[in-house]
Amino acid sequence: MEQKIRWGIIGLGGIAHKFANDLNLVDGAEITAVASRSMDKAAVFAKQYQAKHAFGSYKDLFECDEVDVVYIATPHTGHKEWSIMAMEHGKHVLCEKPMGIDRSDIETMIAVAGKHQVFLMEALWSRFNPSIRKAKAMVDAGEIGPLGYLHADFAFYALDRPEEGRLLNPDLGGGSLLDIGIYPVFLSYLLLGMPETIKSSSKFYKTGVEIQTSMIFDYPKAQAILYSGLTSESKMEAEISGSTGSIFLNGQWHIAQGYSLKKGKQIDAVELPTPGNGYTYEIEEVNSCLRKGKLQSDLWSHQNSLDLAELLETIRVQNGIKFPFEQ
Image (cartoon, rainbow, N blue to C red):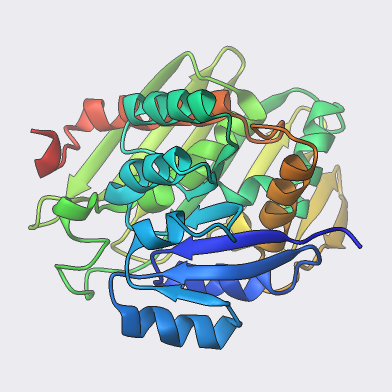
């Protein structure tokens, strides 16, 4: 029987709970260790998801010989530091998106991964969603003709949340762009590549974080209209239109459970439900790469993360989105 890939998780907030639930659904993977700055929190989390070890510090988990790969689920501002520390302890890393606050962070992280010959991937789970993978395959195969238009948004109301929390706190890299705007930007990049030019506009909250950003990505023969916001909900559907047809990713499109293909008056709806919370595909990709001895994924490579960070950085510079720790 093939030995299971042994996972550690640090940063035991909401997303870590969803991820841990899905880890337990994946054959060939097991949660060996979890860590929080609160030992009590780690112990409760470990019991809930049947992890063998609970630690009251991230460093203790990195030093555990029974961990192969670490999932970094801390706030954005800790991604670079904790990923590097994990890799310096010889651990493979799946780091929650955005992998770094800016492109230079990611360059440093990739260099450390290369030095220690460990796997590193940004946890952009939507890349592995079956509906999104199918949409890309159809676009690449020319099933709807050359793309001319793409629309994707991601929005929910968050202005009633605590100002010291992750979304509205500038000291934690808050705002809509890095947290949820990354998804529409990713979809445009995945299907159309790097744009020739970007036009964007942002609005800000009293704490100083950006809470609305609209973007136009200009390509030689296409435009992408993208949006992220914390001031209201949106349909969160994605439309991918070419000269001979359109693909619609069902809302919430970043975790799509299916899609529709429209050609002329004919519409074919396809259901592709995902197990658990939708993280199993990402986990299986990491496991597959590790078993093959690969240091990066072909589906979401180091270069993909660098390109995505460059796009986000361009938008931030255009709109003066800067965090106190960057001054």
